[in-house]
Length: 131
Image 1 (cartoon, rainbow, N blue to C red):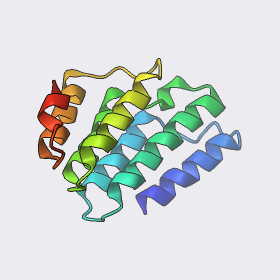
Image 2 (cartoon, one colour):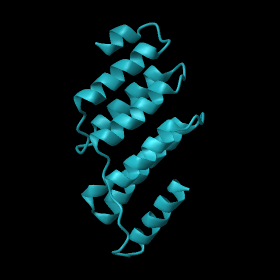
Image 3 (cartoon, one colour):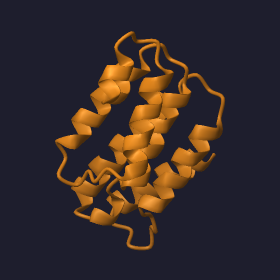
């Protein structure tokens, strides 16, 4: 339900409706909701929301729609909690991909989340990769 409301607001914003009030916090609320579901696809859904944020910010020129360190960290944490055996690879892949974005400003919590994901992975060299 919340995702459909967010989608409606996105559509209104793209149609030029100045009353469509949406910002990064709106998206983060959805990400937090996704994190609390037990759905097996929650990590992929969260990553899609993050991509929507970036595209919407670019299309509208509104930087307040860009993902924050909270947004990025939430998605990484969802992956870390997902129990997927290859989470170390996925989290590293996302972290390196996002590092190419000049708007990506990882926080201490972001780095700790990456280390946590590596520690939970079943990849043999995860401890060395965490360094």
